[in-house]
Image 1: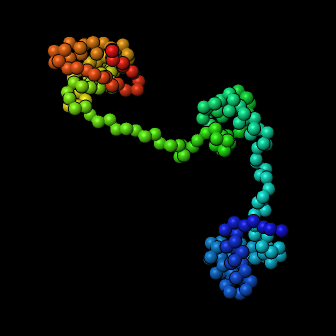
Image 2: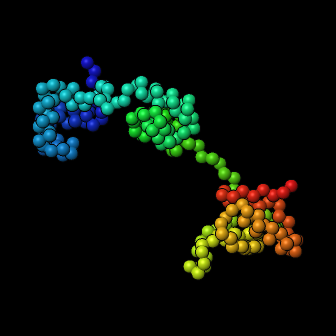
Image 3: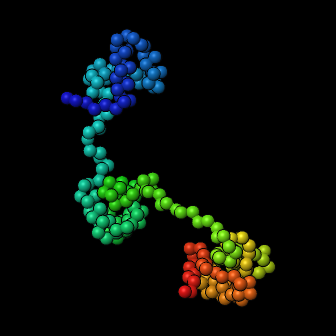
Length: 220
């Protein structure tokens, strides 16, 4: 009968055989394997009685007692594929346990989803190429708008948001306005207040950039 052994078990077999051949002592063997002499004597006794098979892990090749039924795996994967398409392992696990009543861990579901190509681990995802955006060449060609919520008045007034208009080419501040919140309405008010100044300076705004929280689109 063929016995599958790990590298660690093969090393133990080699060292125990050297003891039997009287090439090394039990003390030297204990140092080589980083175990106690008592463990060496126990392994040597098993080796002499049962041969190399005694050193192999008893559970190798057998189904783990903690392994979940195959039927459960298939049911979970079918639900994830049909009803929870696009869900990550954590959210899918929440739905499977609360809605469908399944009992399994998040990591178990994650491994199942990865094996079934229903989820790609972050380490294996292709990185999206990002093209660098260079600053504009001319003053007024692009005005960047951003808002910062902070205690600007150091406790003398309520916290508020400061909307900032910055010229992309020069980095110079063009317009500042305090408001209660960073909302689309306040962005529109600030842009409207900035318009007369822009006309006086003969600045042509080709595009406005804002952060991901509020989107502004220029008029055609």
